[in-house]
Image (cartoon, rainbow over all chains, first blue to last red; front, side):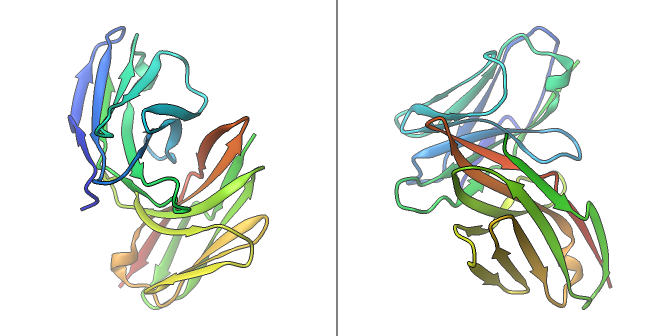
Length: 114
Length: 112
């Protein structure tokens, strides 16, 4: 158990809809990152938040957006869903600023877009 | 653009047969190189972080090493429970932003 929880575990949405995925970080962690993992591929970095500010972003379009809250929980929002957005979405929490970048992942949310 | 390449894509070992997994990378502003283990349907499990060339870390049957261009994950006398996909990732600074790049992984199968 990593202490990082994601909800929901599975989700089915229709193309064009919007979705919000949630992540509760491990206690004491101030940084959260989100990843998209297609079947048989490595995780692709979407973005990272440190103390409620975005401080890292991968090659994803603006319809992928996020929030980090004062309690360091986080949301990933995806607008105008496309079929290719079907994937496992992972969040990872870490404690930045201490020279330690060890990250702990949740179990993921499996999103299917039909 | 940052690149991470892992080899081989798949590896089948007999129990007790030691081997190494490779992760070669091209990145500027490296903050750290990570190794993770991922079981089917689960999130990656952290194994190691390496920060500078020459660094080595060990955990049970696993040992990770780092050079300026690649990292190796050595598996000594593996057991069937070591079967999993092993992922390598690099974290780097780019234009004031942090970015993490994963490889596609090596799928390891250890046969009793």
